[in-house]
Length: 498
Ligand SMILES: [Zn+2]
Image (cartoon, rainbow, N blue to C red; front, top):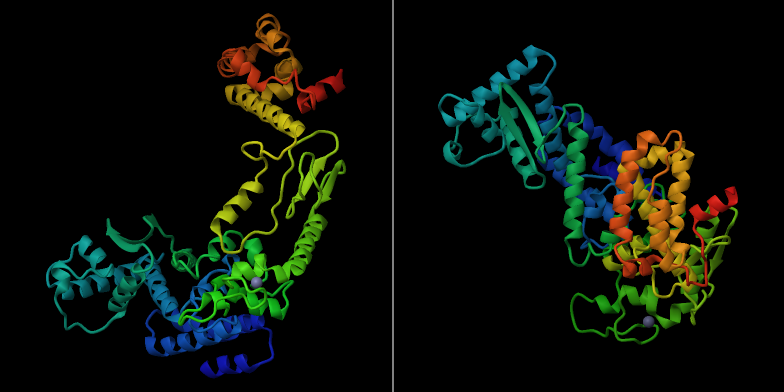
């Protein structure tokens, strides 16, 4: 197998194809041998070392780079591999669990009896259920600290494998009421899914370990968030060789730049513009010499986004254009501006600093359906539209919560009544309370409304409590004096229906 790996390394396959070939034609040959559980570890460790070295070479990483990216799943930016010695330990646990929980009573009884015998030889007294659990979990305290002259068996191997795995994941054996079970993070693991669950847990451990690294895990905090950022890992889609050579180094922060020298006090200035620190963020986003390239990159991403968007026909997309009230061009944004109704724009920040978690958080916030507060640069109209929409949504959510969700749809008078309440914000402030008290406070009594009367009364009480406390509160959401957009979707729909 070592020779096969060496031949794959020398082949003319693309790097991502080499990973595929290794996985399907070399490592899969081991899976049958690992199944019974007991395998010699030394050859596996040697093969692991060889694999790790060539895998890093195929990712164009220096040998000092972290090995964790090899062990992460594709969706987190890894190559979906695992160390073979760890796979052997997992196979050992899987095999033992399947024996101890076999559907054939004679099989699990025989397995449990042999396990009890091994434990009895170890502790030299009658075995209790807790003893079996502690033995399998690799306890070395109390009665388990004595040395034994017992021969090596599958159960002694299992004990060692469990101890090794417990240093990485929260897994333990439990023997109670005559049956043995395996707990992963406190939850019982089923015999059919044990292998995949243990693999996932180990991969999660490697991801956590990589993210905890202050230097090489910094970028992975961002890129491991979504599978879209790692779409090219499996098959190299939309990726050129030059990009493949660069991106893995960049993600681990091991690009050989002047500002990232590990030893010595050499010149740290940028080799292109002469600025103080030649770091990766500087080269990618801030170096003046690269500004034209950055602009082309930015525009290419915007074009790609626009092409991928399937927007409703009444929507126009403005790229790199000024917004009302802005004095400078808002780069790095695609703004969506519906024709008919001034809704706040949804900025899609397409470029962000590759090494900052805060940027990713900011990115996620921007991609939400609505901002939590109107940004300062929004035009006055959109601010007002935002407030009206949010208020309308809050009122409708409240109506749904008190039990009027179905009523809005089924009973027309109730629907109209709620729409009129939404329109209160367009009345003069001094009329709001009187209109509410004289007209809207009384739920409709038409046909079909009877069963919803308690819910409507509840809704009236909560509306008064939230929105009509005093005139100061009313002023906050009233838009009578505003000169811009003076409608909401609900009111507009009501008017069009009239
Ligand atoms: Zn520079």
